[in-house]
Length: 76
Image (cartoon, rainbow, N blue to C red):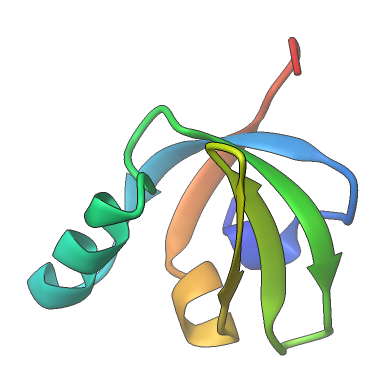
């Protein structure tokens, strides 16, 4: 499912990034890679989402979060 559909408070694992190469490199440099655990801090309907990744909080726009495929984490 896309990251944009996740609920606040849930923890998910990145399955796939369906984005262009330049953006992929930028997100990779921040640690947003396949297998990364993400906690959803806040989210607006079709708006920005704040996530926790590797101990840091990042704000991502809807266009990006709708292109990041994730699966539910059962252990975090």
